[in-house]
Length: 419
Image (cartoon, rainbow, N blue to C red; front, side, top):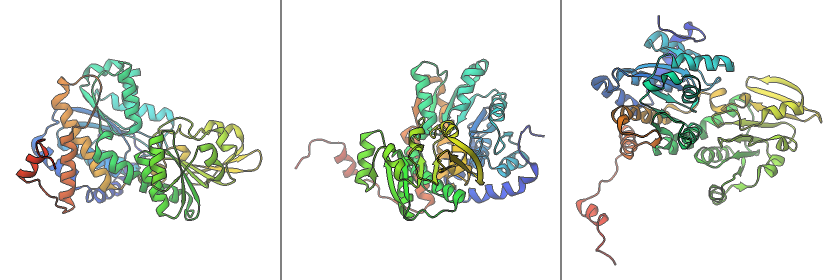
């Protein structure tokens, strides 16, 4: 029996149906899987993956396995596991999985270490917890590792900090930096799935409400536009003048969080930073305010400060905690402040994750081929991989594009011709 720590093996059949449903919307990854099955480019590689355990991730795991990899999967967030998917991977694909939705912090790190017990040659991370644990607590395994990949903005920030401190012991490809990842996954995926998570958790109407988006990166852009599409009055908060200016030009109100906190009905953080919503913001929020996070870690909302301000905490709906303050106001935190699109919903649609996980698969193949020539730092996905994924996606959508003529190529590479 494949080693595992999952919730319930009886959920496996439902998980397989969910995985098969997602696969229909993942044509790029399916094409890569077919090639991997023939060529076995990952043969002999032990891979430890720390990702959200979803139906889309399951199709990535099956692709890596088809490529010859010996893969183990653990969750990258305590609330992001789909327990039926975990069961299906164990019982149908014989892939070891260590993940249970709602696991406590101790179990989460026990599972990370179980994945590292696999003695990986390659890591595949979503938030850099696996790589961080490997470097801090399991350094005896570092000599085995030839490289890794990282899925998220948060993880890339952590890994680049490690590289700057000369603490990173192997090269990592920042899958998040690929245009076919952050341009689509972060904008369209996060935009839709975050709204989905907030609505599922609250069943509240967004139209006519003031919706505050903290951060106007790719995730913030997507979320702000989707909230506006639902009829909300959207306010953006930022610390960088360039995206702040872009938000203004896109038609949103921009102001500091201290001002937005007074008028917001819904708040959602997508910054990757600490205490974006803090005590002094809670001090001025409306009674009944809804506060959520769609960044990777639950540090963007200062929940410990809110707990100290509160006289009572109660679970009023699944994934909705009500904090009653001393003055009688109620503030609602969704999904324990963890990424709401996976805590109360199902994460990004499969058609978006198709490109993100195609990047993961091809980045793993690239890493294996080139690790010996790479330095111990963070690399972007090679442009040729990014464009190949875009090409495959367009082909799957039956979309054709133009091709440059010889004259056009010559013109673009010359400087002699002018007006």
